[in-house]
Length: 136
Image (cartoon, rainbow, N blue to C red; front, side):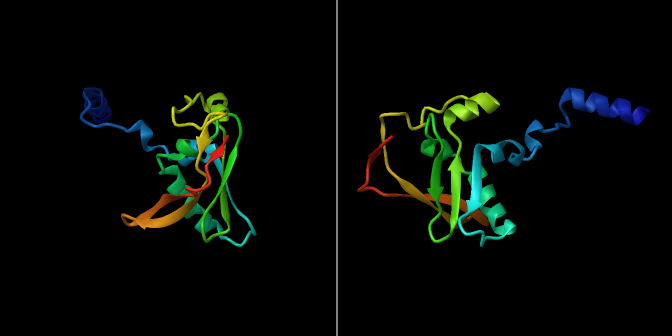
């Protein structure tokens, strides 16, 4: 009984903290895109590496359209990511529309993604088609 009282006091004073963000981000973030193999020749463990890298990629909203989904191919691999639209995320999760979202009528550079080694893990690196500006 004394252990529980002591733990209660320690938690209430903030000596021990439980980080509410410890919940794996995949429970939320996996619903912001669909990752798939073009020819079904990529293993689930390989797809998991791409998924984790995408979840950790903080610039994903810069590639997102406002009203429609966007599909981006990974270079050298037969993997695509379909980004949900900014409005879909607002409806499903209450996520604010990012100021970096590509709006209708605005120009953007088409891109592919590369999976690169980074700090003992993997990261996403966008490769832009600079000579191919398009309007959404």
